[in-house]
Image (tube, rainbow, N blue to C red):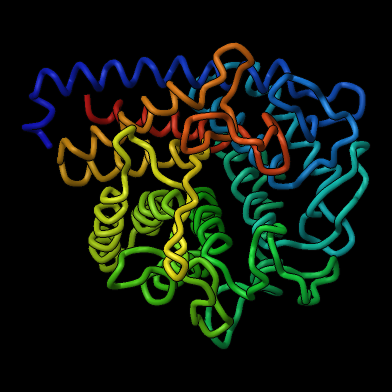
Length: 408
């Protein structure tokens, strides 16, 4: 790596990348600061389209609001900008007052526009993101209630969702904690008891929670989650993740999600580093570098990745979504840091160049949802929505800024 950093051309590119990430972070967060606050009904709007039209009656999702909480908390921690602190506070108290189930624990899946419970199901994916957001708020503010809520949500997940027979976590429960028949995260998903996606974001949440609460049992749970990925979720031959699984870890679909593979590569490495397990970290590093290398083989000439590949049907879903480019920026940069290989640095920069050219809405703010294979905008019209949030792209900016800072 030292030899690379003595390379004048690479150093200049790092400086440019760092500057552009700082500017883009401000641009993204200015949109969320100025356009998304629901002054009339509280919290933040549930939906705004690409033309800037606000749907004031849109439901408010737990995932969107937890990601808003994470984004402004992380931004305040990085910049100490009081505007970000104010919005982090707003997100924090709205989550506490409206999403937190005071009677049965956990987080409601969604609220109506007025902030009343709409879907009271307990999707573990949603609880994980709540932990991620509340733990980041604690890192930014040291507010004791944030840590308390994190611990309560962690206990809820472990009490109801942890599978003591096969390990891992089951997907969805009633308000009271009864396992549901319909476990799906969204209508697009399969109805399977375990998914890669939920496990990835529990891993992400527990990693951040361990930063603020170095509990011995939590450490064990975090390390077990890492091992679940190594044993059951990452295919040892293809170096790609199995997306949908039975309770005893048999894959129920033969799909590849390129964005999740590159995202998991850096989140797994981060989890192993934060856990401090010296035995586990080298194993994880080798596995995730294999994942990154395999993902790199699927990069397109324009620097992007297709959305998904159905191996059985040999069919590519060729549209490109905003979050995949954001995660590629971080995942490839992480591999560059670990190996010193310039091609990984180039892949990270190329993902950003693709986003700049096709995904950034310079006129309207934020990023578009994505583009089709011919670069026309996707029909998905949310600029803000249940799944369209400031977390992937603002996090990519923060990650690149902080990683470059450690190198130069």
